[in-house]
Length: 54
Image 1 (tube, rainbow, N blue to C red):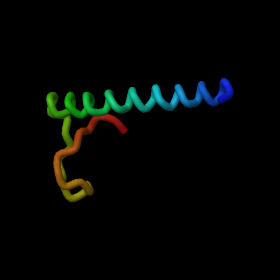
Image 2 (cartoon, rainbow, N blue to C red):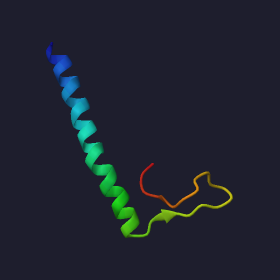
Image 3 (tube, one colour):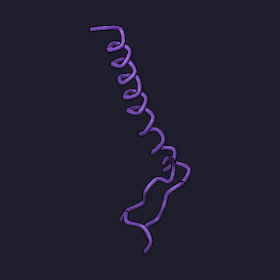
Image 4 (cartoon, rainbow, N blue to C red):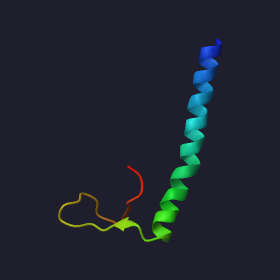
């Protein structure tokens, strides 16, 4: 494998691991701080959804 392939593989692995550990903690903080979007007529979701993130 050439150096570019190794760099791309490591970049993908690093981004995956950051997302794997960051997303659950962000969801936990949203529930802890009560930053949740409640379902209403304008929303599609049917349960409380964390408002953090994009």
